[in-house]
Image (tube, rainbow, N blue to C red):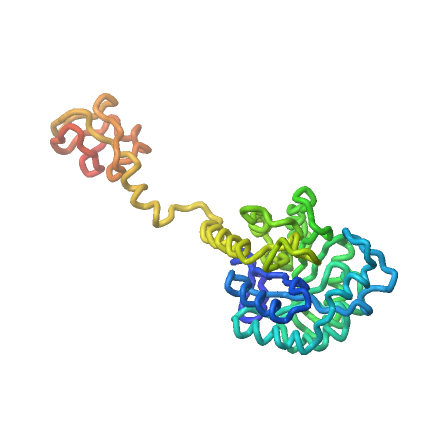
Length: 349
C-alpha cells in the first residue's frame, strides 16, 4: 500500500483525506489575522494550514505581465503581499503547534526553502515551478515529502520533475491535480484528470489543489476524494467578500466545517470493496427472507406437492432455493397449517 507521513499523520490510499487550508497571503500582511486563520483552520478540522513565502523581486522580473484580472505587473502585485519574513513564519509555526495543526508554507526562492526547513514536515511546490530544475533540486536536498502541483503542465513535465527530485533521493512525492486558472470554472475543473494521474503514476499518491469557487455542498472537493485524491488543498479565508489576492475563490471556516462533515460521512459510508453480508444485515437476512411453509395441516407420510407449500417469512426454515427438491418428499411427522418446514421433517421418497 502506498502511504506517506506528514507530521504525525499517515496518508494512504483509501484512507481519510488530508486537508490543507491554503491561507496563502490572505492575511493581508497582518500577523494577528494570520494567527486567527491558523486558529480557525484548526477549529474547522484542517490537518494543515499553508502560507506562501516569497519576495516580489526574486519571484518576477520587473515587467512581468499578470495572467489574471489585474492591470498591475506581477512584481507590483506580489509586492503588496510579501512583507512577512522568517520571524513572522516562526511565529505562525508556533501558533500552529499550539493549535495542533501542521504548519506549511510554499517557498518561491532558495532562501525561503532554507529557513522554512526547520518549521515544516513537508514541502509544497507551486505549479509554476514544476520546470524550475535548480529549485526542484534544492528542495529535494531537504529530503522531505513533496507535494507537487501540476497545474498547466504536461505528463512529460510532471515525469521530468519527479525524475529530477528522485535523482537526489527516494523522496515521497504526491502530484496534485490542479488547474492554473483563478477562479477555475466548474467546467474547467477536469476532476477526471485525477484518475489519469493515478493511472500514469501508480506508485504515487495523488492529490488535488482546488481553485474553483466553493459550492454549497463543497461537492468539488468531495468528488475529488471519491476519484482518488488523498490530499485536498483549497484556498482559505476568514471572509470571502474581501477584495485582494485569493479571497474570492477561497473557502471560509464554515465551508471547511461542511467539507469535513461531508467527507466524514462519505469516508465512513464507503466501506468494503468486496460484496458480502455485513453484520448489520444478518437480522434482516434471517427474518425478511422466506421459508417453505405448509398450506394445510398434513399427517406423517404425506408426499408433498406444489399445492401443499407456500413461501413466507421468516427465513429460518428451508429456503425457497430448494423448492424443487422438497416437492415429492415425505413428511416424517404431523404438521400444522402455516408451519415452517425444516429438513428434519422430511425424507426422500
